[in-house]
Length: 415
Image 1 (tube, one colour):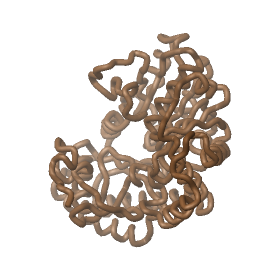
Image 2 (cartoon, helix red, strand yellow):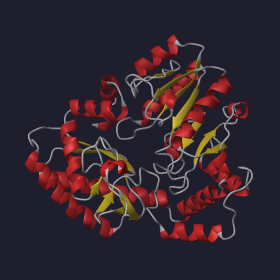
Image 3 (cartoon, rainbow, N blue to C red):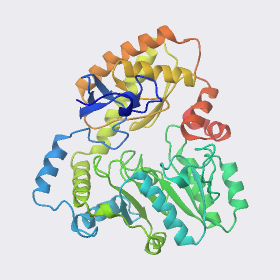
Image 4 (cartoon, rainbow, N blue to C red):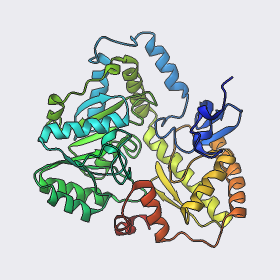
């Protein structure tokens, strides 16, 4: 039997946190740990599993397909890859050239490399989380990185800082990188940033690793009329199988022709088979619409439960991905802790994401668990504390490393 000792999780975390739970199995939006305790997953496997874990349609089709397909090929250039590239180009027609990688972090780093090779310039101005690779471990995401990269500069969603950086680095900026956070920042912010990119002659790179396959058909940019030069995609491409993509215009992706982007494991044909099957199921079962429908019910259930319990909280964001705001970080951590104790898998800060498997039984189980979690939370926490603008500023700083000005200047959206 697996030893659930300190080597099984991040030992510096307290008990009953996401990293102290050792899972054994999952089905739909419900997972079971090694002790037999079940959890209702609020994260859709961190966005990777829009169909739900162990989806029968997907697993059956994949098994059947792999009876005919080869698992690994001598080259990453395969029929299944070409078929998936065609599907991605149809979904994202403004950025028709596609290059595949393994993870979201791979895609974001590749996007930077492509932009630098295309423009011959080193500087990338960035806002939002782009993964774990070294180039993104810079302030404010890392207070004192051992390897400082002065060519990666974070504008923290603040247009004032971005304009200063564009002026200070004139002639050396390859691109502006932006991660949409629909709970906090309106599409107008990206539209303004797109205008600045065009004005200064730099590439616009949009990180849709999290939202691209779930926010709307064709992604965040297409929904809001923004035409980026490069988009990064990952979660939902292949139903949790490791596969990501950089999609770009023909002009921007000329940088990919000059940059080295080799990847041994793209010879795993199975990933492309999984990607094609996932996108087929998305179309057949109208998965984006179902994610919105399930997400709307999920948001409503949390909001109603907070109101019924008299707990100050706000539910912010789109139907397919939203955030829950409590009066303070202390309140938020306490809420997440009580949720985990009663089998609701979440964290604080954290983005809640629906999946297509959430059914009536799931919502009944969630209601029962949420009532217990909120009752315990009420007993322990100060219910006179209110959600204020300061709560939101603190949340934005913690979750997105956004400045106070960036948060408050977009108050019309989240308020």
